[in-house]
Length: 196
Image (cartoon, rainbow, N blue to C red):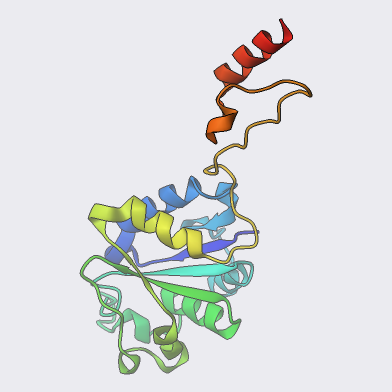
């Protein structure tokens, strides 16, 4: 089951979305913890139901908002994409809002948070959620910062420092009085010295 759902517009934030996905993959236990791209929708599947189901399985949805997120236009109809009830982004956001899933607007570089009157009525509460900023020049640091604050049930232990194993009984570790945990080499030397 995915824990994080990344919602974005391809013509608005394709590169940022890929970069975010790569950064998050280093912070979660498995790539399966992230639903990233609608390309994973199987052929012949009702995409509205599919997206709704995927969102329902997540703990949080990250809504990437770039400068073209709000005003992106469908070239075939000439209408704003957000005004289409079957717009992927609108479906994703609405599904999360309807289920009280944590929604995090991710504001990219010079983009801004939409105003209430600029959004379709069924996703207007998006503006009530506290957003985070993601800048190109501080990207990785920004990701680390907001990821650490996400209330996910389980997070990866990959980036946490390993705690030193306790020494065998009766063995005194060099440097332990100084308050710093000895490294592996020091531990081995200490063990050999004390047991000699």
